[in-house]
Length: 192
Ligand code: SF4
Image (cartoon, rainbow, N blue to C red; front, side, top):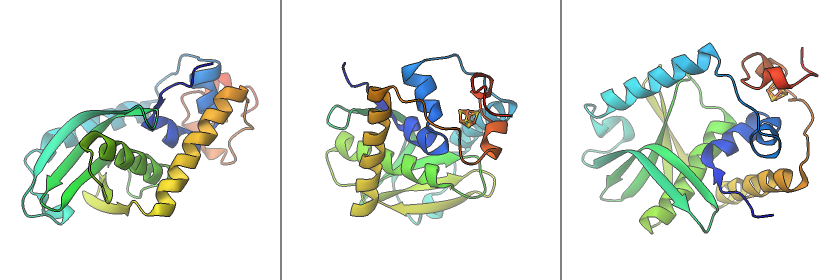
């Protein structure tokens, strides 16, 4: 069986609940967008529009060029994704992921790191880290791509591939609160 090309969002989803990977690749089902997701999508588009007019100071840069909605693909990593934005400045390039939340969660961090790895392959130059832009507060959080963080991101990709290969149906999410907002809730017979 050929290994599928993973999407950066798979890393976020896997950390949210591994069952989502099962419903995406092993037994694909149609997902139902929740109202919260629809609002998030609109906020995302609005942020991209406004971002073009904003200064780069919130990222700690004076001058630079921004690139929006960039498709990134790496055959080496077997990974693809559409990055919200990256900023190119004299000391390098930095991916930026827009998130409609006040505080980045762990899955947001590893999604950003996956974009960092992809951007490196795309630009063929080292990328030291990137930013999560928090839409409601307009704050940015810098995530450094340390060797440990890179390794863990690759391990997550390995775990996702292993789940798909073994067709393993994971246990229900440990944080049951997540099920309430989950687009796959209808397919999980064992959640309330
Ligand atoms: S409903 Fe809960 S267990 Fe099912 S996929 Fe969603 S988060 Fe996971």
